[in-house]
Structure formats: structure tokens, C-alpha cells
Length: 217
Ligand SMILES: C[S@@+](CC[C@H](N)C(=O)[O-])C[C@H]1O[C@@H](n2cnc3c(N)ncnc32)[C@H](O)[C@@H]1O
Image (cartoon, rainbow, N blue to C red; front, side, top):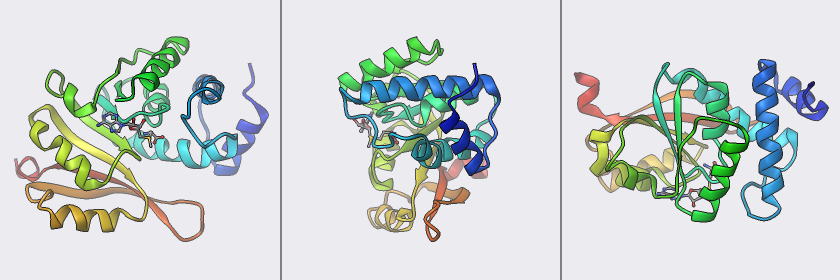
């Protein structure tokens, strides 16, 4: 079935080309997300243009940064971004979702069942499930400051390879705050991607954070 004309037009305007089966599955995800959005507050991006320019844009930045077969946890998945589109675009990796608000986690489960995606959903704080599971990569978007995320993960680094944070221009201030409170002392932070946010002035970044000792290994 051809994909929605407005979705297709938004993809073309942004210069994105997706394989048809993936575009179809992403369209199916967005439709079910918007459907549930009327009952639960899951996203403010409720037209194709905004979805492509804000959500898909961030996910497409993550796609090339993940190795085949990686176990990836989307911590604070909310309505499913970035984890669900990432699972659709990278069927060769294992994506899991953690969402601490029970109602949202239940809806995320409905999404992955409807879309027939092999994506476990944990109705829990992401850092808590690190007691039992290990992930090569944790992805986070719009969940908390760098300080907060680093403090949550600090006791769990044996269960985590690295964190990929999707951040806007405030990341520099957040880094200052995290350094001020000593949260970055044993950590290596590097910028893996920089991309325009479409407002003509600001940039988005993908930041990788991992224990500095592992960089030297
Ligand atoms: C603002 S939403 C962002 C959702 C999504 N990542 C996005 O970018 O659209 C943040 C979500 O993270 C969840 N959350 C906050 N802290 C969490 C934690 N420690 N573990 C799991 N979920 C968390 C909240 O319940 C909320 O649904």
C-alpha cells in the first residue's frame, strides 16, 4: 500500500528516503500513537511534518551509530520515540523500552503488539532494570538533564556499555552542571553527531557518555 501522501511529502522535503516496508511500519506506528494520544498525553507532534522534522530526524541520527546485534534500551520511552522507530529502522538490533509511568508502558505494549515488533516493554524506571539486564547502549531523549541521567546510571555502569543522549543546544550548560557536581569525573563524553534543528540557528547533538577507563582499554 502506498504510504500516506502527506508523510511522503514531509519525507521528501526533509530529504529522507526510507525503504517502503519501513516507511509503512513507521506510518502504522504514528497512526496508533496519534490514536492513543487523544486519550493519553503522549506527543505534541501531531502532524506529519513535525513528526518527520523533530522525531524521525533524531532517530535517523542514531541509526548509523549503533552496531549490528546491539542490545539497546530506550530509557524514558514516553510515546515510543526513539525506541519504536529505531526498532523498525534497525531490525538487526534488539531494542527494549523502559517507561516508569504504568499507563504509558501499557500503551507502548499495545503499540509493539499491533506492530508485531520484537520489543520488550518494561513498566519500570530504566535504571532499576539494570539490576537484572545488560545493554550495550542506552538511548535517552527528553528524559532529564545530563546530571540526572549520569547519576541514575552511575551505580549501574557494569550493566551499561554507553549512553547516547539526544540533546538540543542546552547540552553545553548541562555538561557544565554535571561537571560542577562531579558527575563527569570518571566519564568520557564525546559528540558523535551534530545536525541542524531546522530553526536556522540551533543544532542538535548526539552525545556518547561512557566510563573513561574503557576508552583507554
Ligand atoms: C518527556 S517524555 C519523553 C519521551 C520520549 N523519549 C520522547 O522523546 O518523546 C519523558 C518520559 O520518561 C519517563 N521517565 C522519566 N524518568 C524515567 C526513568 N527513570 N525510567 C523510565 N522512564 C522514565 C516519563 O514517565 C516520560 O514518559
